[in-house]
Image (cartoon, rainbow, N blue to C red; front, side, top):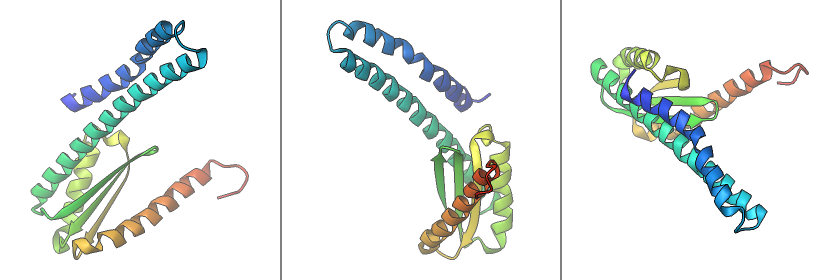
Amino acid sequence: MGKSERTIKTLNSVRWLGIVPALIIYAVCAGVFAPWLTAVLTVGFWAGFAFICTSEKKRILCADIVKDITSALARAGHKDAVFEIKPLKIGIVIRVYLIRARHKSMLCSEAITSSITSGWYRHYVRAMQIVDLDSEADVSEAQMMFNEDLWADIREKAGRGRNDGRK
């Protein structure tokens, strides 16, 4: 288990331990402020603490993913690429826009896929989208195409669980 993975597990545990100081805040403020204000302060502290832990978890995950993708591209012999990592509620979506990879695109794609599937964070990754572009100017067009594909995939997966025939 690497340092990043241990940190993520610690943050997941510590996030729930934030309830203890929140209860202390409640106990201290209960006699001083109105009950509704005491509740707002308590919930606000706990929500803020949980948000900070979740944000740090996402930052660590994204940093490790970028490091692994960069080293995979270096092994494949290609350096010109744009990464987009989208932490969504369903999981992380990784997008790699290879710039003028041409005949190396398959090798780069395999290297990136291998790197991600062997990484400690693989169960956090929900989707990977890789494309070869002629220039960085084409990234916005590819983003729109990827967004449409991603939404169609999400709608399809969400529709499978319904029993009323809707999609």
